[in-house]
Length: 435
Image (cartoon, rainbow, N blue to C red; front, top):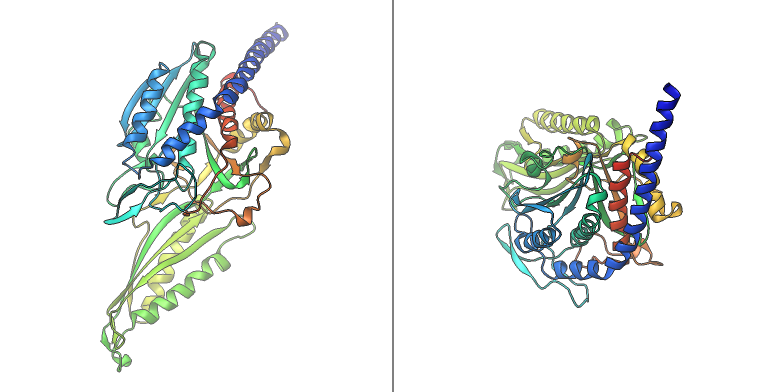
């Protein structure tokens, strides 16, 4: 009897997998046919970029498209976010797919017909606005994914939740935003999400290729402020002062020992950076205080906590040794957790990525110390975040413009691959395929 039950289960699973393979064949054809439309959407969004928490035009474009597909739409989520819910014709898990919508305060220099000419205000200053990280392509690919999956709605074994997120690059100063606010407002509930997938275009990875990493793939980030207070004096009489500039220099040097002496570099990398130091206003006055601003990056929760504790200890004790004081705030305004790809989920879904791109085109990548607020979703549900090539074939990655720069450029030829990957991950997860 037990053998018959197992055979029945295997037969049922085989049928489901065969149906899924048939749907994936449809996905491939539909995604390839959508490629010109994906480029059109991306160029339109690229030409009309919007900063975080202000993506009103982009959100309206997305909402109108989803509604035209018969997808249930929620707008105004986490200020300007859009969520689409596609209920399949058969019972199954809830799979979330996410794209970020915001641009950056960068003035574009790329000579393309759809280059951004948009200007806006950021932190009180007039700035150019540019999709200098590829979020415009993420939106276009998720719009295309929604179109393909909605066309096979009756065959889906579960529900798909399309999350179009604002402010991944950070909310304006003093505001909430991004994935953290979306989670707080319940984007992973009603219906409850079982798993989430996301991708990021990469200008240093050749088009047609996919890279991934299990575990910590992008760093946790904390910004920090250190205020050193001493005693002011005339610059001619330094012995009457407690010089916060000298103390700050000692703190900066001592902070460098955290990575070199406290971190197990055979396991993970980390970063301790002071990016700003301000104090004093004349050459002959030793000031009363100095302010330093910096960033901490770590690839595990344990390393993140160690960095925070060591910075606080080093700053306060170094200052104390000189008769000064140091006040440390971590985070000052920004904290993203580690972007952590669930190892079991990554192993299970790797065959899907290899099948859609070709095994030779899928590679394990090193961890990076950049950060991603996709991590807030992964704190709540298992998630897989991977990278899609956007560099023209035959290009030297060392000579291509980096993300967040005025010369950032991507090859649009891989967009249909992004749609196939998101669709196939959804279908295979719903069917229980994988290792």
